[in-house]
Each structure stands twice: as C-alpha cells, then as structure tokens.
Length: 319
Image (cartoon, rainbow, N blue to C red):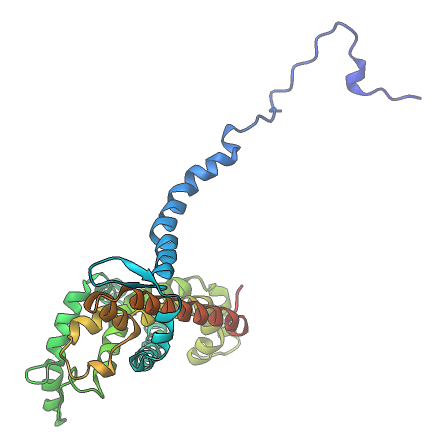
C-alpha cells in the first residue's frame, strides 16, 4: 500500500489551495538589515571616538613632545616620562592620591549600612531620607567646597564651635598638613554618599523575600542575615561601587583646588596626581609634561581596574 503525499494529489491544471487563515507566511523584515544597527550605534560610537578615543590618542602623542614658549612643539621621545619618573613631587602626589583613595573607600560600608537601614520595612519618611542623602550629588562642587570651608574654618567654623562646646580644642583643619587631606576626603565621602546609597538600595530591593523568609524560619537574627545573606547577594553592587569609587578618587581635583588654594601651607601634603597635571599644563604651560602625567594616571587607573576585575571572581556572588 503506497502513501501519496497531500501535495501530490493535486491534479494537473488545478489551482493550488489557498493557505489557511491561521497560517501566515514568513516575510522578510526590511528592518533586519545590518545597516540599521549602524544607524543606532553610529551616534554613540561617534561620540565615544570624538570625545574619548581621539583625546586619549592625542594626549599620548603630546606626551612625546615639548611645547615652545611661543607655541609649536618638538618631538622629544620619552624625555617627559624620564623627567616625570625622576620628579620628587610625583612620589608625594602618588602618596596623597593613594591616601585619599583609601579614605574614600570607607564610604562604601557606610553607604551599605545606611541603605540597609533605609530599606527597613515600615520605616517612616524613607523618601525624605533618600532625598536628603541625594541632595549633595546634585549640588555644584563649588557650593560644597564653599560651605565646608566655612565649617572647617579655624576661627569661626561650625566644627570648632561644636568641639569647643564639649571641651575639645579645635584646629585649623584646612591649613594643618596633618589634617587637610583627611578633611577633604571626608567631604568627598559625604558628597558621593547619595549615589552609592541609591545603587545599594536598588540591589537590596532585588534580593528575593523568600530567602529572608527561609532565614527567619531557620532562626537567623538580623545580624546573621545581614552578613550571610545581604552582603553576598549585594556583592555585585558593592563591586560596581568600588570600581567607580576608586576611579573617582584617583581623579580628585576640584575639592582640593577650591577648598585649599595654591598658597595654602598644606598643599604639599594634599597635592594629587591630577593637581600635578593642572600645575604643569595650565600654570607652567608645559603641555608635554602634563600629558605624560595624565597618561601615567590613565595607566594606573587601568591597572587597578584590571586587578579589581580579577579579584572580584573570589568574592562577588552572582545569581
């Protein structure tokens, strides 16, 4: 017994049957062309090339040149880098930058703790607290520096007045070389706290409630749940914040420039790598040396970021 395919039963000259209304023919999507991807990616790629990649390449080229007193430049090879590595101010700038970065990282556990408190169920006024913590993020750095200069003022500052009220002698925080860098780092932590809290709140709200309920059934207390569940589940957000915090701390300049000034006696103990770049490029008009400083900072940031990405495999837990 032979079986004839359905399409073979159609006799010659007979029109083919119309397709069922429930069956749609696959049509070629005119938007599937790869050129459409370029239309959407093109503006972003152009912006990255013009404002990021080309300035980086241009800075690298300038770092191998020496600017003339009346304009123009000449190729000097690695002379700027050799001079930079022998500059005693570079060691101090690297040390100050490293100290500022370490102090700035203290803001991460502080932001985690505040975000955990703001994420507490039944807390009244959570929206108001979030707004208050985020206000410094949208405030201009110049305004922040001006306010904190008045707070740290050694003669009429609010901080010294509060310390004097409890019998503690104040000091001139921004002109004392032993306290100026720490005082500025505290302002940096305060200014960036709002961004970190928002990121951590988003991470906390992404933790499933079922995990916490299971921990409650097992008899885990709030402290045990925080360190055994919240911190591991929040580790991707902590890793992201740590990366951007290190990059931002290594590039600190505005607070130091606006809170201290060039004539401040504490400047040698607070001068960072970016401030060294500012002095060479804008005050001494030595663009080649300034470009060498900038590219050295770029290499340092790149290396530290690579190290962070390598280490995150040992402590970051993804779902």
